[in-house]
Amino acid sequence: MSSEVFFALADPTRRQIIEILAERGSGTATALASELDITRQAVAKHLALLAAAGLASGKKVGRETRFAPQPEALTEVIDWVAKVEGEWKSRLSQLAETAVNNSTIQQPPAAQ
Amino acid sequence: MVKPMTADRADTPTTIKIDHDVSAPPDAVWEALVTNEGLARWMGEGSTIDPVADGELNVADVTTGRPRRGRIDEVSIGDRLDFTWWPHDDPSETTQVSIVLKPSELGTLVTVIENRPLSASASASASASASASASASASWAWRSAMLAVASSFVCV
View (tube, rainbow over the protein chains, first blue to last red):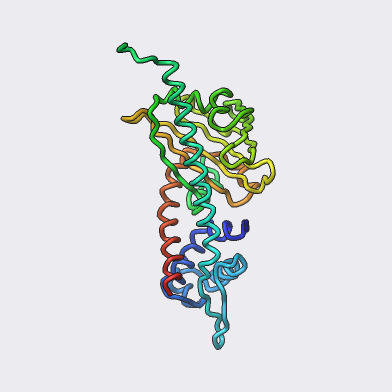
């Protein structure tokens, strides 16, 4: 499991960048900078990190690099979430069973 | 006290939240969480817990078949247990867990919040905090956005 993807997604600005790229299909550092109101240099750093994590890919178009989101990398996170959820569902049903047994031992029905 | 790491965590998309309504009172659920006997029944034979801050946690974790070790971060007796844990065979999979109990109509609403920190060092410095439930809802919003992103690309 790549911790790069998790690290890349942990930053709110980078998530915003991915969301914008996903909405538009692609974008350049200049366009993103004006939209997010941060410097082009800062956006370029974020884009490089996203690209390194496999969450975006850049392609030279004239003088600029145009970035497109790479949703395949997100499946790793989605898979992790699904796995952990599944594990807890199973643990919690066992926990529930244990707790129900505890409570019947501690508190026999008073009505009888 | 708000640690910088905690603020980051509030925005982490890799937080999951699961609710489970249990037909037993909170004290019965609590007993299943913090006693060795109780823990062994749902986590597997030989599981042990020392339910105090910095106490040790060892679970067989029959669900995954991968024994886990952990450390208790914080205990609020009867209603909240926070710990950091990892599989024996892969400490890089360290996560932070909060188990919160609330009385419900049925008995007890058990909420589990599990968070994957940015790095292993983050888990050492950041203990599960009271902001965990806020972070869970923030990440929920983000998770649906993420799923939308992923699905929009499947269609293209």
